[in-house]
Image 1 (tube, helix red, strand yellow):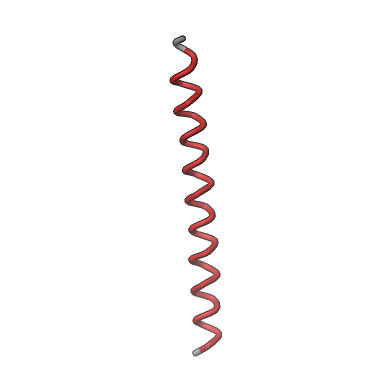
Image 2 (cartoon, rainbow, N blue to C red):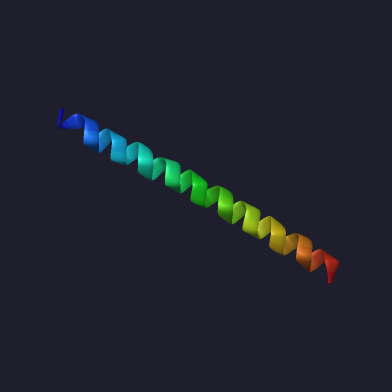
Length: 38
């Protein structure tokens, strides 16, 4: 049972890392689009 919490937190960390990457990509894309408009 000791392995499970470690595995769970690793999965959670990976999930949040992916989420953060997606948000960054989205933010960068939005910045580029608004820069094109100006």
